[in-house]
Amino acid sequence: MSRFPLVSMLGFLTLPAIAGEPELVSVKMIWDKGKHNAFTDLVRFKNGWFCCFRESDAHVGGDGKIRILNSIDGDAWNSTALIQENGIDLRDPKLSVAPDGRLMLVAGGSVYHGKTFQGRQPRAAFSADGMTWTPTKRVLSDGDWLWRVTWHEKTCYGVTYLAK
Image 1: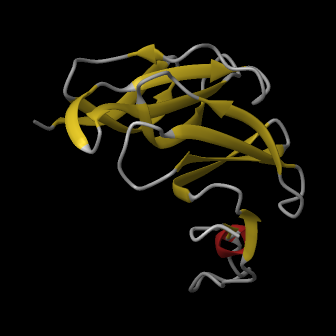
Image 2: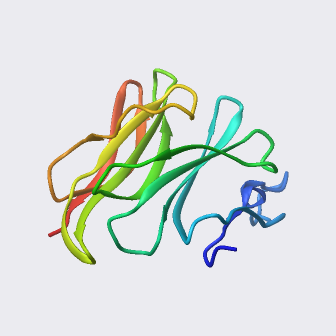
Image 3: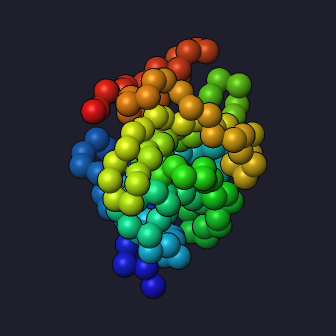
């Protein structure tokens, strides 16, 4: 069993009929096959739930991959993709639905020599079904860190900061 299992908290998104505090309905482990699973995101896409997260050997290092899980009912979860880039530590993945109906993944792409940070540049990838993804593509400038993006009409907006 993983030291860092992922849990599903879909019940947290359920609000009572009358405005009030959110109610935690249940907590369930949905993945425990990686040594270090972290930085989750969740989105509704094509009548299903898609969860993404970083999977690696440790919190920092050059081996981070992005795991994509899918569930129709929020109960049974299946791994649909593992996105990786040789020599790049993919981190902090976020999902959004693009205006053309594809699922968009943004993630940080860090380079380490051992545990020593060398640089970073965000990545983006797209999928029509959550299973088959385009190769990751560098976006923005070296040193930028792109967080979540959102769409308005056909324009993607995001928040980034330059970290040196």
